Length: 458
Image (cartoon, rainbow, N blue to C red; front, side, top):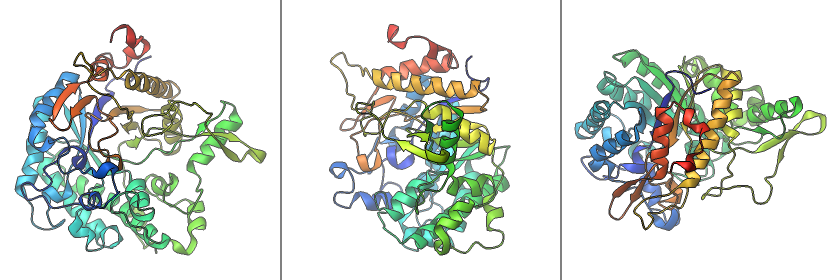
């Protein structure tokens, strides 16, 4: 079996991680610009101010995407490049950049999948309360309307938010991501509720303003649990662990997804958080629970779980020597089987893997090429598990490799390389890696080549 007909193959990147041009043509800072200026916040003090210079080099980058044979590209919009104050007057120079980028992609027969928020919150709105402000959902919806009115004659696929677990939990609760705050739980939950309302209002804005039939989803962190064995007991334990509330943080699955897809906060979340939960006004859950067209999710790694006493889930430590990536995350290909399977069973929407990839420490070899065999093996293993999910009944719609090119990997700076395209950051020279050529064949065969030994060819 190969992947379904009309399956979408692509790769992705985000505005702050590749564009650079941080102070060009009217763009104002985001919270990530601010965070990068804090000593010790990122590896060796790296920032996204220059990144991959995609703002200047987008035509060349699209040409490279065409060489890879990408049918789709997931990009994001820099909110403050378009609206320097976060609201109000439009910076048409900034908006025109995305207008030209969309045209360039379409001319190369690459479908744009646009993410409307990938963490780079305008600092002008952060100064007015950010996600804590009750006005934040309206700010976001108005920004979304501006983008959709400009681009929806050519863009059909929209993603509202990327990984709210990260920009709320890591950004506002632990302080490990921008803006670097460590708020009390009631404030974190208030910001989370406003974020969910922002998603719902954004969906309404897209539906109202789109100039053609469109498809909408979002891209949360995939927090799957893998059964230690494929016994009924361990499978049920993994399913329970994946959706249960475990601690008083927003690094959870059902807390975010049940309101969006089921129209209610999970009962165990309400019990666990108690009085820390913000007031939920009449109509809030109806706003959050907007009809969506696909279930996007970013998946990398997952822990193993078994049924313990009385069937209660128990997480199992990884054995010494278990494969790990450059960022010390564990390599668990089964993530792309059990994650999509459990999500499909619970939410019943076609699955799109909006991010999946491997950080490595690769470099250009003496022959001028980048021989990233680990990335090929990693991606092949994960995609074979994803194919197995389809074989066992999950409806799959697409897969976006993270990332199209090496870029600014937030707190890890330019250390970890996820790209299909190698970027030499001092010179900005691009080199297609072996994985890019391998992925082209995967796309051309709609996944059939996954059943070949890739190292006989590359």
